[in-house]
Image (cartoon, rainbow, N blue to C red; front, side, top):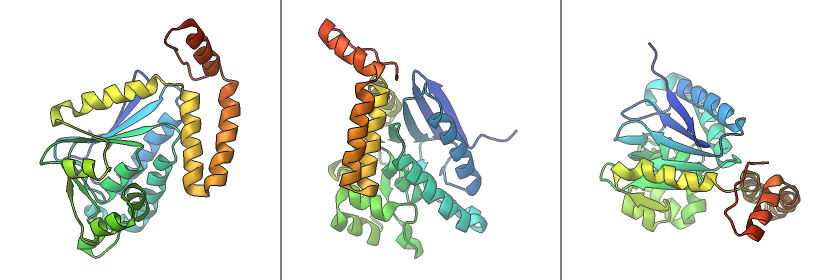
Length: 256
C-alpha cells in the first residue's frame, strides 16, 4: 500500500496538511504534485476557512528539496516556486506549525504562510542553507526573507547559511509565537479557530488587498481595498456583524 505523501484533514472549518515523508519531509516532484491537488481541494471548499501546514514526526517541518529526486530537479524548481507563490497569494490564511527543522525550500514554504508558530525545541531551527551547496534559494526565499527581516539581516542569513533557533526566530520576527513541542498543534488549532470565527468574505478581501499591494504596488492594493469594501458591505456577514453589534451579542459569520 502506497503511503500518502501529504495527509489532508478537515474539521471545524480548519484544514490541516501534514507533509508525510518523515524524517525529513523533503519535496520530490511527486510530493509537490500531490500537494497541488490538496491545495486545489481546499481552495474550492467553502467550508475551509483557514489552513495549517505541519510536518510528520518530530525532526523536520521540511528540509526542502529532496536531492534523491535530482533527475526531476528542473521541473521541481518551477513547480516549487509556483506553488509557494500560490500560498503567498492564497485568499485563505495559512498557518505554519513548525514542528522541527525548516531549511531551504521548507523554510521558504513557511515564509509563504501568513502566520508561523514554532516548537521551542533544540530540534527546531530555520534557515536558508542553499549556499552550502553552491546554489541559491530558488522557491522565493531571496524575496520573502528580505520582506520579513530586511535586506541586511536576510543577506546575513543567506550568505552565511545561518540557522536560527526558535528563540532567535521569535526575536527576528520570523515567527509570532514559540510554544513547547507537545503543545504546538493545540496552539495552532486554537489560533486557527479564532481566525475561522472571523467573517470569511472580509478575511479573503483583506488578504487579496494586501497581496495586490505586495505584488502589484500600493495603487493596486488600494483599488482592491475599495472593491473589497463594496463587496463586504453588501454581504450577509456585514448584516450579521452590524445586527450583532446593535443586539450586543457575538456575531456568527457564515461566509456569505
